[in-house]
Length: 422
Ligand code: AMP
Ligand code: GLY
Image 1 (cartoon, rainbow, N blue to C red):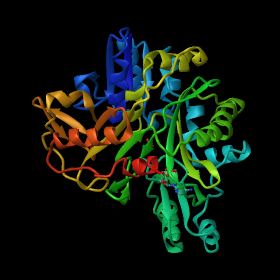
Image 2 (cartoon, rainbow, N blue to C red):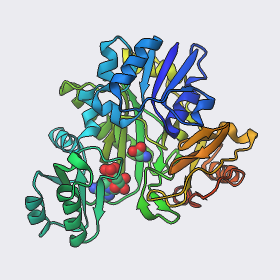
Image 3 (cartoon, rainbow, N blue to C red):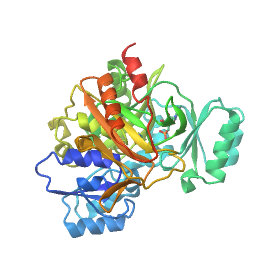
């Protein structure tokens, strides 16, 4: 089979490496991919949001199956357009991808179907939002309705911060038209767990739960990022929490999307907070998480391509989806300064023996050399029989990898290990 993966970060690298385990896979193209992915797939310089060019490429190459891994193309309807020319895809169509594409949609959807989430109000004018915030409970969370590169949720610890957040999003248009409407939400507390789930629109199979580390710096300091490291399984997702989430959140969501005429096929990501009242939804994503995928897929024992095809064609209930009992830890090696400004263009040195432990996110090839080209550069993943060993191993690997301006948090998995020991 000729496969095309749309996207170009660590998540896509992890998906490609897993797909290559299937012997039916003859060739994988990655659009646009990156300098590190080029070791495993043919990278094609087409932007992941250039849907007409993606469709044209698929037609020209006779692509048998497309994996649309990134949020923007999914929200823009890449799957719909590829389906129109007869290319089956992994990932939801535009109608279903709205579950991530619009916070207003997802909040109203959860309210309608009684799915536990933070209380909220929707505003389409800054004036009304500012008036409401004069007396609203603080802390609060202000979120842009549309996509904002994962930066559209502002947790506000004071009233002034909340006023400033509304002005930034609605008046200064920090996230463009994504901020035409906002959601103002109750502030929840508790550990966060990402539950990525395969679904064919009927059957839903949760993957091993993971926990991301969103803040840039060690000790949960610094700005929110796309994610600085992950561990799986997440110790916060106890049997009780998992049962409750399945009954009150995961199954009801999949059934309700079908009832709405928006059956979801692909990977539905449940961003949960385990609050004192039980699991609640922080956000839905219409795709695999990044860097969650870099710990979840290495633990998948079953064949990824077979599972993906079953989400597309139906029959997921008849396919094995099994995970190993081991644990995994992914430490993101970033460019110092990320998520703000940082220097790039430094050579990356990865010992040969560690090449299969590394997912490349932000690098380019120049004259045969791998150079840093992004904020998140590498995802270094270790698998071991338990979480403390996986964390220790991932850090051992990181110490043997080098590039100029490298920074990584030194406490990925620390709290999770403490929680295990409680
Ligand atoms: P989101 O983009 O909605 O996933 O939010 C990004 C991050 O902001 C989450 O991972 C949480 O850490 C935090 N966050 C979002 N919503 C809430 C909330 N209602 N209460 C507390 N923290 C939140
Ligand atoms: N790691 C968070 C996300 O993929 O949205």
